[in-house]
Length: 314
Length: 257
Image (cartoon, rainbow over all chains, first blue to last red; front, top):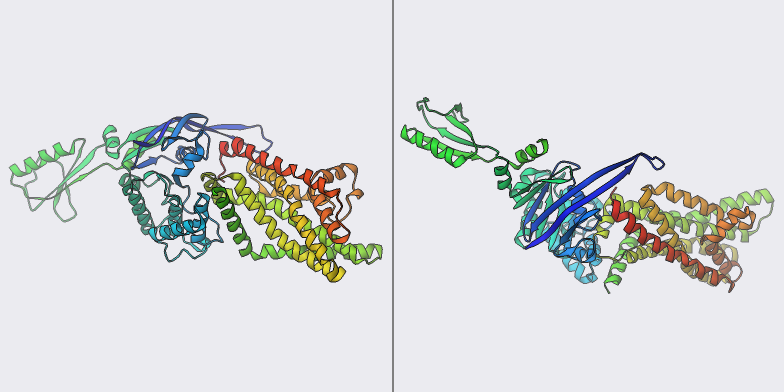
């Protein structure tokens, strides 16, 4: 049912002023994080810089040992069964890192394939397939150091899939990419979910997370501040929708709703509402009763960005 | 089988990377020949005696020194580059044996360094002795290969210190300075004060260079073998320190830069 489960994860870092300095600073990067990620879904983990997203991912991918709490990936304990976890996960930590600069994209993928235990031939076949999948088919034989940022990001996704993992962790996979490259990466992520893989995604691009993710956890100061589907989060925070109705022609303006000038020279009714369907029905009823012609009708949903802003700033 | 595949993957990747960075390899091959010529020239001017064997003594000494220092610093750099490039995190997130990874990395290093040593030593031996001593030199190269294994143990300790201190240059350079001064690469360690002699005797580098010199210039003594075997304890200790460092440090604080 759930690919990723974590309960009460805590991770503290200790930083010193210098090698000989006694001045210590203790930073609680993750403070009791609990999550459940449904198998075969895309799960978004969002939060401001330093909120604990990457630390959570590093714990789940066995790179860090938590100070407290427990976590399981595909049923395996990330501390006690770390090797089993490593076999079933794919990971992108930074889209432009992690490869030998003087090896080609193909050679780098073969290298990682063999780290997962594939024979050289098998790793080569998988590498060639994945290069095609991510759109690097013609560039696999170029040195990694010659790749653009977008190509590096695609290669990172290919690397994360080299072992055909059940669960893929993508930490800001589109950071720094141009819109077209980012779009391609998003399409790849959607494909992964369609193939039944679980994807845990972090990003600062709220639109991206909202578009791709079925469920979202918002982390702030090491704690899960909000959790649910994007719609649930908006409803829970009672964020208002904007209902917009265009009035065509020189209609009488003595209606009971505020009216603004629209883009096409017509008047537009704009209403903030917590219950957009009720508001819309009320407006349409009034306009019909007065024989006012209606142009377009739009309902603007509050974005995840607004949820993020409200949760982070309180 | 899986461990072997991982081992060969790292070995091939590292070897390809080294061979595609020709500059470093050329430096390691050429440096001992010219630096030994410099020190030999200085010595000859001071003593007024020219003796080609002394030049070869220096060639082999600097050859082993270069290989040893390159090896030691390359492990520090393996961690440094791995940390800054994010490769180390990906390796640690894969189901791999860290021992296989590090052994393969070290082996690739030893082989490429040895290639450079072969060039320098071969040229030096040919110039001084002609073809007659070349078989002895090949034996020296083979012995040096095995004698360098304890150095891998030292490298692992240096690597762990690099992870903790996150400063490869000071760590590697400090080790290199101690090793260069106390291992008898350019002069017999009997010239040193007793404390420095002791450091030289305890570290494996002095035994590597003495074994290489004996194979080319005199003959290998049976007493050298037990010492070299004893030095293998460095390999065991290095692996133990690495494992401890990985579990008690790397996975506690992370290895990102």
